[in-house]
Image (cartoon, rainbow, N blue to C red; front, side):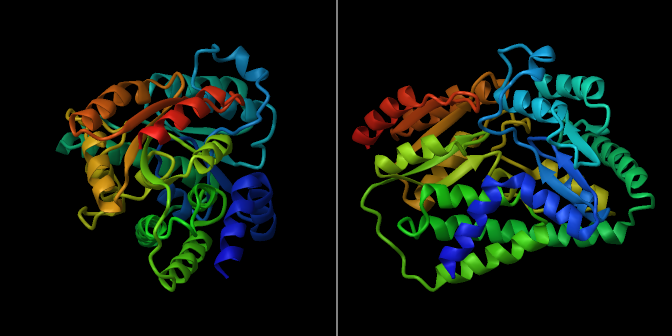
Length: 375
């Protein structure tokens, strides 16, 4: 049963377009793309539409994107607009774009210029997010997104519908957090690829379906005794770390990922939408207020290193890794402070640079081999 569930997650993660198109065809519902690194998926779900994660991709031949972005631009954004321009995303009825970096702000303008057949919905998340005025501002932004989604839907999105979606998404978050901890205590059963596929598959099927699938995975893991791993265990931080070549290199060096502060993975699930708020939109705004350890959410003390150390203790990890997305200013600010926090705590740490368009992992292989020997 567990093997079949993990294989299903793998198939979804490796064949996203097939699953998205099949769902649209069978359900008759519209799909809305969610550009990284964070967005109001609950609003899309409440509108009766299917939120689809758009996190770039590997083996994407960059051609048209070069007309819009220079080479020194994060590969995720290059891949996103390439797939928009070449028609891969034509099944989408719109995309939601968060303005969380200069590159993402540029993407919103370039998208409107180049991908005219898929309307974009731009949302700005405030950096003064813990102030009342920041929450009020975000509520207004969410109202704007809601209005755009209502235009695509053709009718009003009611507060009760959003509240129901929040309930579903909070349930999914809790199960994903539980999965992460169960995976850390079963490092022989849940390998690096398995863990990555469970997280990645959540972007390409409805949350209700993924919630049920993860619930079953967790129940199966609970039946198994805790496992002792004969290699080393690490916690990973950064934006995204789903490169199969690098995951396999870790595997070959007997290094298992047992926890993360990755925007693409656990950061999406660490913070529930709180009960606090006079309506559903205010609740969503208060979630943004509460998020910690996320490179796109301003916090003067940069807590990702400190929080990763706590996670290392909880998962009994032997070291930490920071996967810096090449040309990402978000990661470039966090990485030096993350490394310093680890060294100040006398913990082994490795920083590597990842790029979706770089198939050559030999330099990373050498670094990981050396890191494994240090551990």
